[in-house]
Length: 489
Image (cartoon, rainbow, N blue to C red; front, side, top):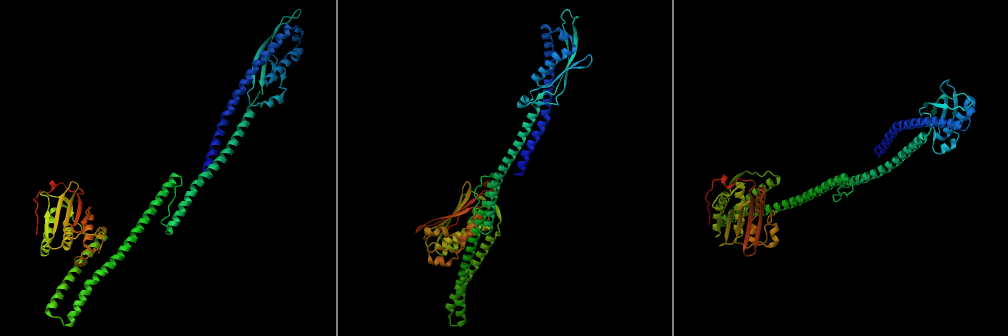
């Protein structure tokens, strides 16, 4: 606001200085032109007056120097002074005597027109001569050498300068008031949005993450407000994620505790029965087998929990290289074929005849396929089939694992990749799992930049589809084409 007012006053000051530099020169030229014109007019008026006196039979007056000055020169000088509004003097250049002198007499009328004597105007001296035609019986005529001296012309210099000064003062006052008004308006336009930002930041500091900055109509303030709103959105999202992580951690700890309690309780029971000594060899052997199963389950669960903790911490080891995807899938299928055969389940494998070249971690792909095939075998009844297929598509490689099990209810499909979620469809198979295999499978796929999806029909079976994008992997020509192999049991 102060800067705006200062700018306006500075502009007026510069204008005033410029006018003070320009106007004096203008009025000086105007005064000089007026005195020069008035001198010429005075000389013509004196000459005309003398000629009219000569033709009117006033030769005796013209012949008498005193009467000539009083009755001819003085009236002519007075007429010139009143008409031209200047001070007029007529000087005899021969002896330097002053023949006539006159000043304007109607000063009030001149002042009413805004005119005043201009002492700064230059004085103009104009020599001229007058012929004196004497009538008979007077002596022959002669010539008068005269000089018209004109000074102090009435001009509008003072009135004009007064008007200019008044206009500058008025304009300065108006500019100051306008600048103050504009400054107050601009300041309020900025301070009100800034106060709103301050209020928003205080509410945000007190935990009101739902607060938002409304538009203020000022581009810079609105941009700042948008940044504040984006920050609030990020904080809200971060808090939501933290709360979700806290809830998941609480559920995770509860699930782990529950999962560990079951095998530990079974082992404690088996151990106490062994200590009693009232158990025959057959029962002892059965207890030992079941204890081995529970220990294997604990070992499997601990390994999976370790993998999940590494995944959450971002330190899950990955050795990603360009390779043939068919090879780790085939290894996992062959490793699962024997356990499936003991359950009278057929496992088939199909792959393209040429290399499926993408970037992947071999051990993680083996783990992924092993989890998916093991899960399919677990839920497929005897006599069923588990089909594994690798397909090479233009933008990605696809792994599908399909089974002929009972299927998954539609309401459970969104949760099957959650940790420790084991579904409700098949009791015995559900009880034998830890609910971690599919969660780990999804994490492995996502770490490869892909995604996993599932489709299931009750009574017909389930299909897991893994999509692995190429992610800049070399074309198939980078690896030697090798024939596909298939495994079936």
